[in-house]
Image (cartoon, rainbow, N blue to C red; front, top):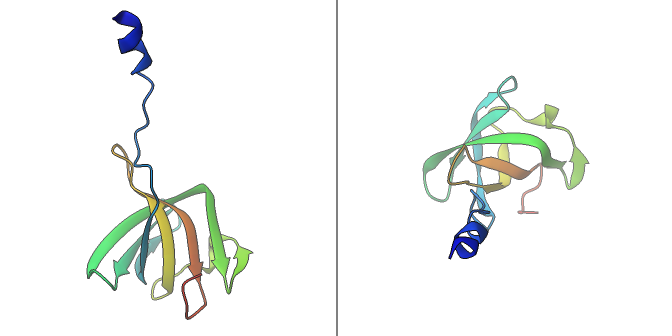
Length: 99
């Protein structure tokens, strides 16, 4: 019984699938590595962080985060962990269609 319980202790604190949002960046904080996207499809605000593993694409070319700014239309893939704040894995902009 103890071995069975011990094997269950190794869990993940995030959901297994990536979520997507597209919309306009409403707020942007370089120091905190966060931005807020106004989800145009669902009409809600989504606050996201980015990490060193987040990938940024402008016109389908890899870039760094310096091109992000308020008012920019973006397509974002992100994860929403059970504990902690949601974080972006991919942010794309500069194209009329979703990459």
